[in-house]
Amino acid sequence: MNNINQPSHEGAPAQSFLLRAVLLLSGDMSLCQEWMKRQAAVIQLLDWILRGVTQVMFVNNPLSGLLITAGLFLQNPWWALNGLLGTFVSTVSAILLRQNREAISAGLYGYNGTLVGILMAVFSANGSWYWWLLLPNVFMSMLCPVVSSALSSVANRWDLPVFTLPFNILVCIHIAATGANHPYFPEVNIQPNNHPHLLNESVDILSISQLFLSVPVGVGQVYGCDSPWTGGLILLALLLSSPTICFHAMVGSAAGMLSGLALAAPHKDIYSGLWGYNSALSCIAVGGVFYVLTWQTHLLALTCALFCAYMTSAISKLMSVLALPACTWPFCLSTLIFLLISSETPAICRLPLSVVSYPEENRRYQRQLKASEKGNKQKMTTSNFLA
Image 1 (cartoon, rainbow, N blue to C red):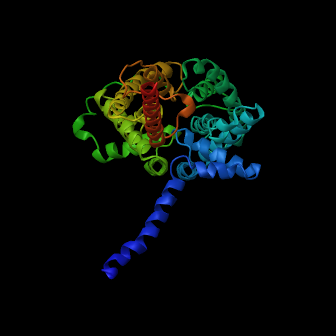
Image 2 (image 1 turned 60 degrees about the vertical axis):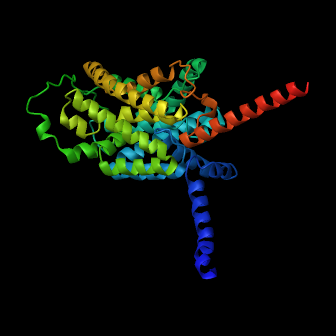
Image 3 (image 1 turned 180 degrees about the vertical axis):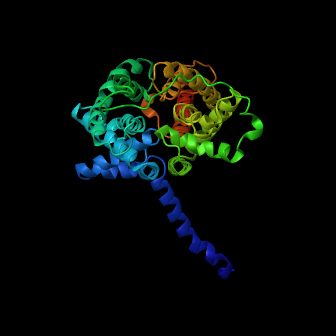
């Protein structure tokens, strides 16, 4: 009997250690965040930058930030460098403007700078390693906290996030101000998006393998990347922090891909993930980040992802007439609409921004809140009975 039981006793400490390691590295790594507060300013800034890189996907985890950064360098080192520079400048600008320190340490003033830096490099017609591009990158990234703070003063009245609206505004301003024929900062020429629905692009010539690959590619396109390897690393980073976010990112990207097929979009746009990235963000936001995850909110997230895909098609056509990219306008508009839903269904519970975390933590918060309310009711009942 002792010999039979011995392996379980030896395996228990190893299992306990593995569980502690997973809990330490997953979620928002809150213990690491507390430890960082006692470190040098340079170390803290590095942590804030990595968290800013992940906040694009509603994740607050520096280890996930390392994985995403590795994926960006795998796609294009020049894009990755611009993204890190944008995150750094945006974060430092928020510090100088004396914005909320907790928000800064969570990366909430860095993620718009990440997207500004990457997408300015993506849309530049001069290609990689055009060093003069760093000047407008720094200037636009510096403005991210300014625009975020201004939009927050309005959005806070409805307890709404600003999402990537600062990125959308600043990148569109830069592209509109320069254009394709600018002598110093020429942009990629964006043509009106009036694709004819060609008969030769029929279902029988669809590449099933490329359709499957379009799901991780769609997730990667959140950062402007079309490599499935980069998309895979981003999904791995999301899985490390929150399996729920990773799942909804794939569901949203797949919903966007299927919507593209339903709307007879060009296959190259579907394969390159352009139909998936906005839907992925919408599905994550509604599916457990700003709503407590239930089967009702899961269906709501899927509906939002499909609606976002339709909005992507409409906004892309409208913006292309102005020679501007759609960026993440469809995600922002569709998700804000779904966050403003009023419902008497207890299962559809939108969290206050002050307590929003990753989905698993949001569910724990709701359970604790319900237990506290139940305890208070029992105390009131007991006191009334005794009285």
